[in-house]
Image 1 (tube, rainbow, N blue to C red):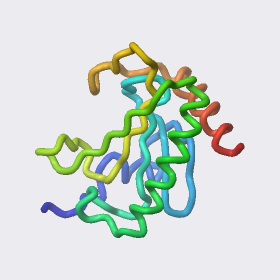
Image 2 (image 1 turned 135 degrees about the horizontal axis):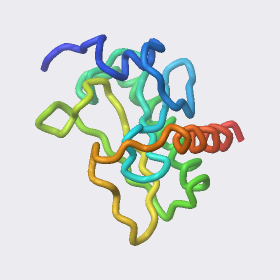
Image 3 (image 1 turned 90 degrees about the vertical axis):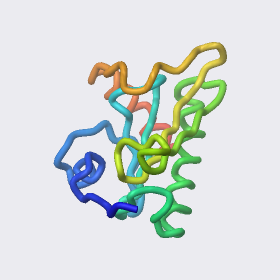
Length: 141
């Protein structure tokens, strides 16, 4: 398996070199909205530790990140009045991974509403900012 590239886009977001619409951060995990969401509230959750994907992440970091995934899924269900959640996670190019830093997609879903195709629609910054504020507030309680 190729090694972790510290210049991937998510590593740059973690270092503050690229902007994002942050919804959650703690000592081991970071969550932000996807700028090309497949549905409103589409959130990405990543470990802060360098991990290319599920195949090389330390178990303790994975356990923490999946707890954050669940917390965000619960909050997103309320904030976006979702009927369900789609959870996606890809590993290596053959598995569909595009950004090689471990990440989980939490996508709030409504009955009868199809997800947008991947990477086809860039959401307006004002919409993402509003969604991030609402989701962050729900996560704080």
